Amino acid sequence: MIEVKGLKKSFGKQHILRGITTTIQKGEKVVVIGPSGSGKSTFLRCLNRLEKPTSGSIIFEGEDLTRASEKRLYEIREKMGMVFQHFHLFPHLSIMKNLTLAPVKLGLMSQEEANKSARAMLKKVGLSDKAEAFPNQLSGGQKQRIAIARALVMNPDVMLFDEPTSALDPEMVGEVLNLMKQLADEGMTMVVVTHEMGFAREVASRVIFIDEGVIAEENDPYNFFNNPQNPRLRQFLSKVL
Image (cartoon, rainbow, N blue to C red):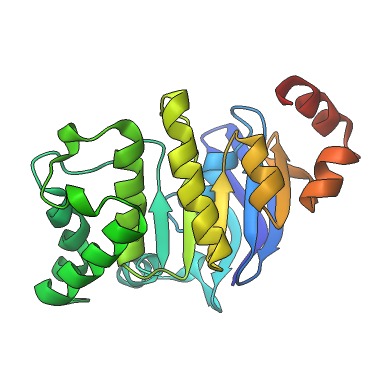
């Protein structure tokens, strides 16, 4: 589904990504971990071209995103759901309006179709009773579940998660991770940047360790955590497990 070749990203003289090459297959759950500042979030944001790569290519469903026009990028992003660390909900709009605004405005659905889809997604995330509530009436965990529902309303082919639980109180982390596990069980293709090692062990089909802008190691969860080969990964795991 996604093929990344020689991806590099610099901000001025600061080299964040130094040449990342990997492939993400349809239905895979790829979890990306690594120390702060290693380039994990930049890698994720390059996948849907929220960040413009300095060089390299990102091929999504056969199309090179580094060569796509702005107009085409907007169309492609409709297939790539993105959930951020912070929820980015519109505070002045009801939850229902937050979920239906994009598909209606982009002409993908009528208001009636969007309402139907939104209601289905609210049920999926366990928040059917919050349709007419406003974001400031929700907990952090509920807001993040709504952010996931908003991405799902667009019926994406892949979901990208950028540290979706790191802004949450510890007791709210579980409700968001459980929803992500449910999506994984249903076969959603997912790329997840996270510090939640338990989630990586349980849900990932593959774990990638990024350090200093390169993939230092990648493997299935069992071998990644139980038999790490890279000295930097062993050091990292000794501090986080």
